[in-house]
Length: 626
Image (tube, rainbow, N blue to C red; front, side):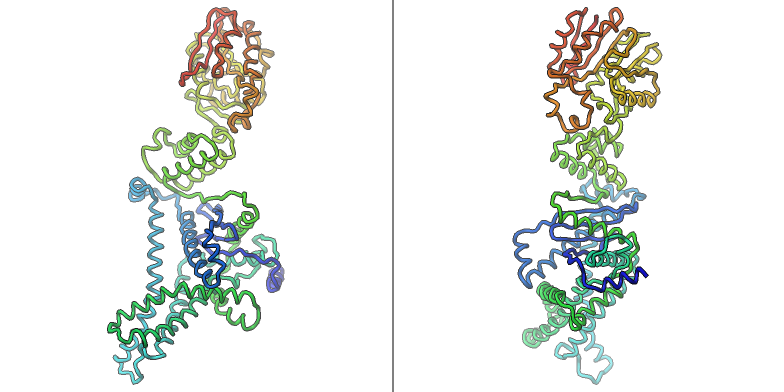
């Protein structure tokens, strides 16, 4: 009952006049608005991917689109180009097959030409399609009607020869063109992919009809709307065909009588006629476009009669009833165009498909550079997802599979928000260990690996080691792992409960025995230690607002802020550390660039101290023995 009521409603005047139109593509729908277009495709994994782009029209194209008859030619050309590109893009999504391993030819194309074999085959298939279209719709009708005089002569027909002098020749040419057109539309329906294409065509029409009649765009509401629409391209094609038949028939007769009369060869006349049709096609398209626009402005019995052939073609040939999943795809494309036309700040999106590694990596680096993100992050992403050493990324070429592309795309999108890469990945490598990291603690840096190494090399049998400001627990865990069997006990301390929880998770994951304690400096620390190692907050408070976005907005400030001069924590260490060190105990600290001299002055009472540099030659570590 509800279905019948909705169908009755769709017969009434539309509530929303929309400028949005579209076309069906492979396993999807393209919708185009005033300033944007969106193509939604359901990929082999069943997910709906949406690619959205801003329409970029030149001033010349904008001017031409306002001139009657000329605008039809411009729209035809742009539609053909855009439609072909959209079909190729949808094919890139629909044609991706995760199960198929790249063959030798695919690998050769990737390495030799830096292109996907699928892209090459798609371009070739489009070229072949154009050639076949010319052959079927231009060459074949002329060829078939040209056989009639020979057949008449063979059967000794008493009827006068039906050649280019005879009016019946042009009637038969028109009939044959129409039959070929209808037969083509009917025959391709035998192909499963074409039947599905026509179902998506129906989903496109239903979605637009639902919007125009004021219905909420839900699969249930859209399903109950009509799959016939008077702005359909099928009607345009029929009008083009009809005008083509009339105009070409008249011009062919005129050319034969007054131009070709002295032309000796039939073959020459045949190809000149074909050339005439091809040359006149844009002009006829311009006229057809104006006719279609004129018909769209009126609704009366006469106009409906003129629209009827196109409507019948839609009903019986070029549209089919879609299922709800197809309707969901059409709605996704339509809503995306509505959003982008309403808000020009909404960014463009792209399909996630297979691709050539070097090209994809370069595109990602370009995106990162535009957002002031270190390009090395792009290399790390591809290295981790594809399980290729970062140093070997540029040494070979390969095709990135759809599933790999999706993983890469997910990480890239999150990285573009500013979130640090290793928080997105969820772990990082530290001193040969996997260390889980998230917003609860600072991401372990390469310099801190050296801090761990200095500590490990300083440890002796049965030593007690305290890792102050342990964060992820990376230093404490590295020491415990490396000194296993030496009777060494390791404790990690941090003021943050959350950081201590993370450190415990990392200790369990790496199967090491480390005692972790929540402590504000030494408040909860008992006993004495042979070595106290510490990577304290040492960034000046005034410099924090100028740090990289991923540091200042995502990493915990408490682990960064070292006070006005960055040395507050070192002063507190100097005040209490000797109370927690054994005789000849050692303090090893990491510090910021240019801080070592000031730190040595903070610890005047010491037996000796040495300053060590990091791999970049920067004085980064201070080792003090009391």
